[in-house]
Image 1 (cartoon, rainbow, N blue to C red):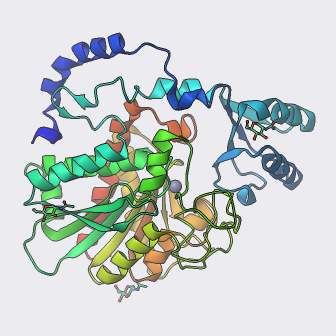
Image 2 (cartoon, helix red, strand yellow):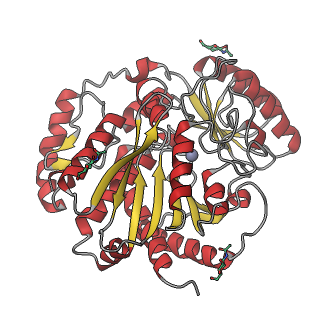
Length: 438
Ligand SMILES: *[C@@H]1O[C@H](CO)[C@@H](O)[C@H](O)[C@H]1NC(C)=O
Ligand SMILES: *[C@@H]1O[C@H](CO)[C@@H](O)[C@H](O)[C@H]1NC(C)=O
Ligand SMILES: *[C@@H]1O[C@H](CO)[C@@H](O)[C@H](O)[C@H]1NC(C)=O
Ligand SMILES: [Zn+2]
């Protein structure tokens, strides 16, 4: 049980010592990512008219902003909240433009580098493990997550089986954990993936948290026991392994995969626009330099192809597909690519409604829920729509905390509350599967 930690009371005793230790090691002048975000700002804008939206799109394009919300410039329209990360050398131009046009804005982050350094302990200078075991309240690098998986595979062979479903573009293994008791040959299953988008670090942290909770509470919690006795969980903690690694080593705000194209200098494809479902239509881009680039053809990305192959092969058993993203605080279901209601809408809707209520009951955090197209925005070629179209009846995408205060830089301090409340939502959905839909 080394990696699972000890009960809170025992851990708390070590805390003051731990903090002291970290303070001593922490020089206070870190240079994460070689300070490349120093002076960058994150600004929230809500265009009030179509003219303002048009003007914003133009300047975003000119200044090559990193759009945090929505994910592509084409989705900027009247009334949409847009959060932009503007590099330091472009912020003066953007602010001047905003003052000139009278578009309302709010600066969410004055200096992105400072926010980044405040929210995380230093990878090299903090204790990667809490005193009593594995630390689930920090973000872990890909290597750490894979070591953790290997370890669990060895120490919990009765409940966990780790396997690879293929290789990434850069040759990394695509590992999945199968969680559950091997009691029956045929059993229904739930697929969970995290980290399709590299910079959404809370996703992989949640996948790890889910596994930890399952192993820790399996004996004591009747709901968890029921879940694991009746369902298999396939958990892929890091879907986009290359991108995730890159977001640790080079660019904290990298979103896509890392594949190269022969004709363009820009790298990477949006792994959530690369699926064969209304591929490369609305809400996806054909341009390799865009963050929502759909790729040269569907399933061009080896990571997407590997997961699609796995889901195709096991679709008879898989009853639910859950994908974890950030940020927006939403629980989304199909369709993403069109405004239309799915058949058997009421079952999915009631599952979402109950999940969101359960989540809110913990810390009062409110989630919106509904079809992705009308709740978030229209996007084609997404994994959720693809899973749904391929016969998995319950497919959801979570957009975890927050709503923009920290955005992708959700501080490590918030991993625990975020994962705790999300656990409840996921358990609710799982239990919904085990009941007959009313
Ligand atoms: C800001 O700097 C980057 C790299 O140094 C450069 O590519 C870009 O064109 C600059 N942008 C502006 C608006 O000057
Ligand atoms: C997980 O453990 C099993 C043995 O229990 C082993 O056969 C398998 O290769 C391990 N998985 C990985 C990815 O190492
Ligand atoms: C809708 O529900 C019915 C009854 O539960 C089921 O037979 C049918 O396959 C479902 N359709 C879809 C598209 O999930
Ligand atoms: Zn995402």
